Image (cartoon, rainbow, N blue to C red; front, side, top):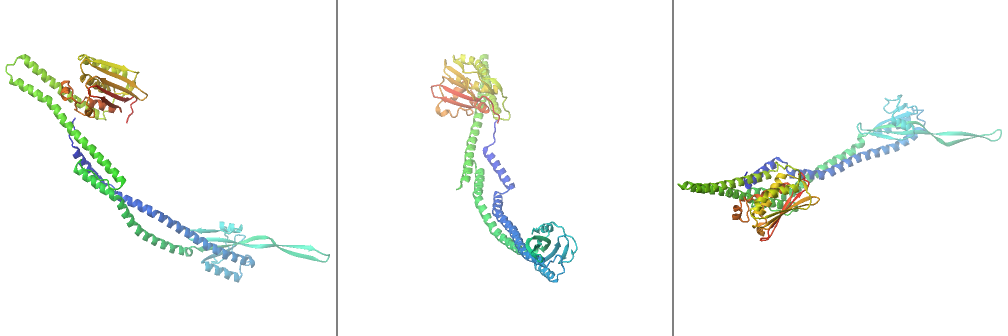
Length: 512
């Protein structure tokens, strides 16, 4: 099948699809702007949050620490006047009320029976309080709790008294001496429990938070335009490159794209220009292929038409002449059919979806069978056909297709050889590949033609190729088959000294 679609129209279709996709896709500049904005603002926001949380905790701890110092003095006063046993001391009640008002909270005095003996709010007097803080206070620990949800602070201060021991010494019979020891120890007789509203304590922190928010907004107003400008500056070369590529795509394969001053955009432009050059070569190759196919298919038809017109113009021609003309017509039809068959074979080989029928094959037997089929052709010109196998070779190949490829090489070596010449075929292998070498004693291939011999319809000697019945597709088919097997083919030739083709095929076929 001959593909007639132009590469230029294909580039136009690709360009249209690219523009449509670009309209639907998100802008790189937008994404870059968002990423840069996040990277710029995230650390700033984290620092602000950490600073606010730390400031809040520090402010509360500072205020609580200060109130604890005052509570310790108050607890010592309560201990001195034995307030636990005498909660109706008017002076101390006034002091407690004044302290509660100063702190903006509430003070409870709990005795060692966990009973509230004094409440500045009065409501809990006579009730029991066995909270965790009070229990720690009874154990002699001063502790505090900051409840963020309810916004209040609780702390306790133990009320302790010193225990004194009285020691009596006997002097003379009529004298007793009594000594008081004040260093005997201390005992917790109650707890001073303070509950304070934390909102006034946090008021300075809230004011600081308002200032931080204002500074954040100001910083954002400065950062956003800078990030927008910077992201635009970064994407500007890409936008220019995209416009140049669109212009080149719409302008044909001869256009080139400038890379700009950035290494990344230059690599993209170089890759695009390289692709354009390859497409240009491919486009030229397809045009040449279509031209060659048209010429090759037209030549036999022209010959048939000339022979048929000659027959029709000859009246009363002898039967022998008719037979001769019909044999020529049949030859041209066979040639036309062979060209079409080779074209179909080449198309099927290029269709990778068809795939290969891989199996374990004895390559030695395959080579012997190929040469056995071609020996009658070689005998007609007294050409010696030799096979040299260095070792047994078994490989994973498509036997039918690879036999066709090797047959083409050996048949060409016979056709383009001198009479009474020779063709040597050798088979060898290593741990990874097997190698088939086909050498002949023919006229060789000119050096300037060796790079083109695998192209479709290329002939070194066109007149001689048509005489031998060649279509110019045999080596193209051979190379396609070798490539399908992940192999390689090379030619070594010198004009007048014969030609050698070397085929290398992996022993184990690896699927793509």
